[in-house]
Length: 266
Ligand SMILES: [Zn+2]
Image (cartoon, rainbow, N blue to C red):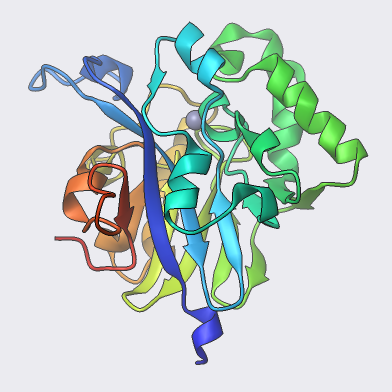
């Protein structure tokens, strides 16, 4: 195995949401928990030859309107890891929710990797119901449609290898075209679940997140994530504050901002 297919992987925390109720994160709530906070991340995977950014975070104005405040702009977090957003060629969009696609304008040189099912879902019949549309921003979905017409969206249908050591896997569940990313690292195959599991507890205790398109598929997705990772602790959930505690800081001055994921978590 040559080094060009072993990746360094980072989680960059760009926002936090304290004071959330457990019923907002677990179907049926949880009588034992008073609160259940969320963190917001974008991810970076780089090898000797390739750089992939996974998701782009929420737009600051959209975040403010929705009661979320940005702590570190994603492009600044990337810059501090030595990556210029303006030159990144590959951006993976796990799904089109506002907190995953909001800043895609920061990546003028990139292709956007997206599942066919996600674009179909975000522009199709279910969006006339607020239950399904609430986490999408229509202006962002329309803007991504414009990118399709410019030839900048690379569609995938199910599993796809983007480079040796890095592949996409449609999980569905949370949204119809939700995809996870499997990455080869020195710690083994890790999986960026994104919102296939918001928190460790969603997948580990089979308590589905309440913003959902298809509950059986979401639950089946937990099993699929375990199948894709070399071991269950190498799955990285999409919004869990514990990620910042279980993994080491990405370097001096990055405490609380970025952690290194190509480690066995502590
Ligand atoms: Zn989502």
